[in-house]
Figure 1: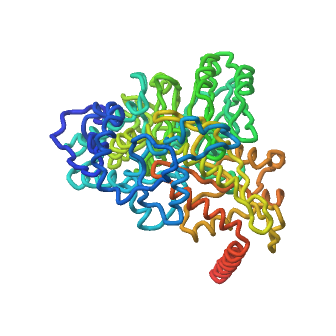
Figure 2: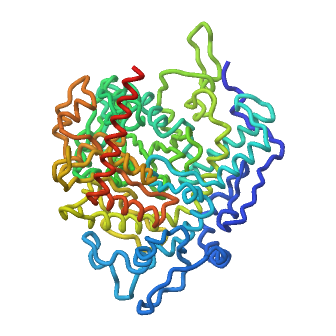
Figure 3: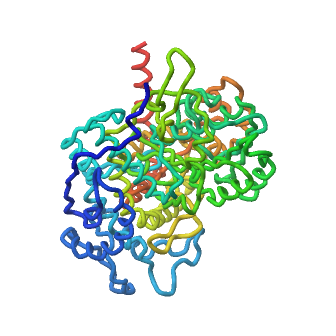
Length: 627
């Protein structure tokens, strides 16, 4: 019939997870497991006081400390990242980085103060402790992971907590009333409460669990009551859509890519609504005055008769731009409903729904703390859900269905009406644990990543080809204009850099100054055990803007393929993206810089090029044999 049992929560037998963490006082104080979410909100507030206590406890981990020249001014007495995990060739650079980076730079002149060197990075030392305890596999495998925008790495303790809970308990489908089902439902409800608490959501919000942020955006797109006279306003620097929602196949407009902001336009146009784009700047994002003019010019005539939607990308996954959240309030003042894509924003930035009460926002939890994959959420006002009209129903979303006939009674709880079938109940307890974990470290993250990103950008910008003296890379993404000064500050941009590698040499098939193929860079990076990302990141608008191919984009025709597009522009499309995250440290950034320097070395790069060509030819030959 439907889902009558899932709306009730009878008492559950006393079943708790028990897992002791002895390596980190900060994490050990968190309430982990399928228990009350009430203690969640205090975890981040306790972090600062716990740091002082843990400073003394962590002394045994410090095998040695970096030495400083006696001529340098005395540094404040603070705990800072020890040199464990720093390779011998990087120690000198690490010393300099800790002491006085960045000094004067083109985008932050005069940063060095009269009081001596800054110590921002050292105040985030607790993240180095986290790196040793929960991400030791990075050192064990030798892998340098710089694709956090694609997906975060899970902390090992989160997996142990979750598997320990699963091994001790029996969980069942939430659409029943057995004891095991009650436990699953209790954990699901607790996960919802934790999500709402993490994003500081007022009581009018609820949580709809989805497969990912793409699934959350799709729910809005397929159900929003677009009509003739409605307007859908979005930025060009936004994510792509799922299969059949976007016109052009291929990686740059991948039909199987993330279902995000662009895909909703297909629902809008199908129902007679107008779609209006806010053009991207050359460095991504949009100009605020231009955006406001477009919103004002397309102002809804009637919120009831012609509902209109404004979709804002909180942070770009390719241009590194953060769009001003004040645009949410401005659009709402004009009568728009509002939707926030927070998939790239949430992993490294604090966000409050109390301060920015958007109608709905989408997140993916694997981007925030790595596990579980396959679970996202639409965090949404109940009043907004009431405006949505789902085009179909499935198990779990209904209470009564007349068969044969036409009568359908939707499930009682608003979130249940949008959760098709059975939710991923076995992994939802990990959402509670993961958010509690992230809340303890998130205050330190922007400051840590700001320091690393400035160092990375500055160092890459200085690299030159050994044979010609020409730049090795060209940075295309938005560069931060200021460094953060203290824990708790928020960044103006993301924590990534998108760039292209330049030839600068006379090498067969690579004229001087031309862009080096991204496929070669990705191959070479893998040989150096570096995990990075190349391509257009399912964000065609921003990719075209930062690559300067918007005019070529306007000439596309129905049925065009990626290969057609690349032949038209004369090169591979896309960028090399290096994105930092929760477990990033100086050693990761150093390895990326050394890799880029390797590409600037004619002898080393020629050897890599020959290997790449040979591997490509071998792959083509194997395909031919298979055919």
